[in-house]
Amino acid sequence: MKTILITGISGFVGGHFTQYLANEQPDFVIHGISRSKPAWDFIQHRDQILRKCSFHQGDLLDSSKVASIIGEVQPDYILHLASFSSVAQSWKEPLASFLNNTNAFLTIVEAVRVQGLKPRIVSIGSSEEYGIVKETDLPLSEKNPPAPANPYAVARLSEEYLARIYTRGYNLDVCCTRSFNHIGPGQSDQFVVSSLARQFADIALHRTPPVIKIGAGSIIRDFVDIEDVIQAYMAILSKGVTGEVYNVCSGHGYSILDIVRFFSASTHIPVTVEQNTDLLRPIDNPVLIGSYDKLRDDTGWVPHCTIEKSLEKIYAYWYNKLSIGRV
Image (cartoon, rainbow, N blue to C red; front, side, top):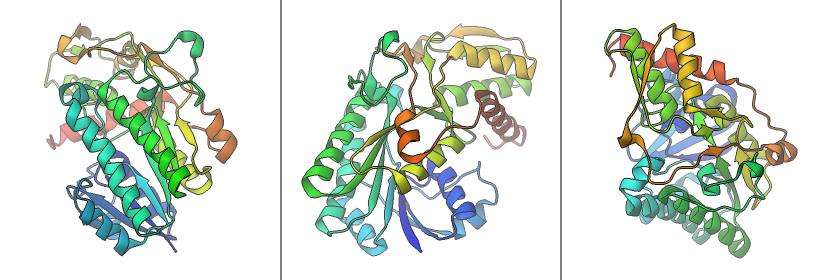
């Protein structure tokens, strides 16, 4: 049996990853830590899944609590998902974004270092670390120099540099990701694709008029389905090279207006698009598209889910949730 500790287990990715382990990897003993207990309204047979994992309630900024949990669990693997993950929110609360992301990671690696443990740690970062890029740089590989352009990205890059120090200086086994925009059922509507899906579901259910509000419609992002993300993280946990950084992406880019047009066509709902200036950011990357060649070469991972299938699942989640009044 192998023991894994998942930080931020109560969140979107944590729930999907836990479901995957519980259903597909019976040789894993699952532990999770988060500030709040999992709700996971997007997980089938949630209670069964919860019974297959041990939940530890705690704040990752509480170093003594984290050290105690890690000492008790003695994990073979740590998947560090917990984060202050909203770029938009990081502009509003840059101090909280930086301190939460960097210090949470530090409490984990310090607990591991001090206790002399040797788990494989995968620390989840962001494509935002690349910053403003030129079209000639696309698709972005891990060789492209990072140049973060928002507070969240600075925090994520700092975490990556700390991982490098702990790997080289203290011989910890850490891999990092630069994860591009992952999407799927259960993601907060703070994030753009989930927000659009919810808006279309609201319109379909006659809760709101046929008006879609967006920020910058022309920005292009590489959206990768949560099922592919889970497989990527599992591949890095099992086959990633110590000290390396991996893009997790689809290799394709779509604009926000592309996503609106897809939802409009698939739901047969014509809409008016309005720009909400509150959703605009002080600085935004016009386009981010990644290359997953390195991850494929080192682990064999490739994405499988199409953008159309992803968007269908997200819309169905919101339509069903709103239909039964769970919002």
